[in-house]
Length: 321
Image (cartoon, rainbow, N blue to C red; front, side):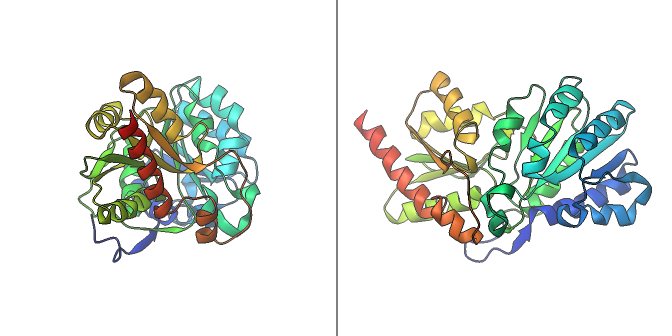
């Protein structure tokens, strides 16, 4: 951890991606970037300025972008296709299924502006369904880093990974939880805080909110384990089942629909391996609306106090068993 909850610096995961992909481009000439007319927003304009011969601008044609990425991967290159979450996971879904996953092509899909913290852009740009859309595809790895530091590590890891990867980033700046020594590994969850009474499993921004919720619970004498689940698929089943067995109850927290997201995936495995009470923090089967990110997080009950309340509920359910 790089500091206490109240003293952490802020940094954007999309900014970290923009920096990391340039560094990666210097190390590996197979790296190419494809953009759908959002290079300034996805931060790939920095790669364009550094490697103009390895940058392809396809305009607002996400389906063509994914098909082109599949063709480049078939020729031995490592393409990073970028756009916003709602466009990259939704518009070219059939191309991702048919041309990328079915053929197991080495395509990296990096989507920014995930979740409701897109804010004032409203429901049309608030992608809260992408974990479900991508996780259902065979061969697809799905990642949502907790902060900028983890994003940089993840970019290098997915470039070295042989196979399709979808990574979600955010528009807003997040508190930086980790330092340069942090080690990221695809498929491994990271335990950030030990605890015995309840396990808080978060992804993306909700990892930070889970840490704050653990502080609130501590005031009430409750010991909460906090786990960063940055790889949505494949889930770290060993770590999650261990948390279920040792704490007896789980709260999942995600800036995504509770349908088909982290909570659903955790529940489906825990119910089989070690059934325990689970509460899910996320967006409950509804679209968002325009507003400031902090207002939307509060409206959709994605704040630390909401995780705290969910933890109290799930602990009570555990005690009644």
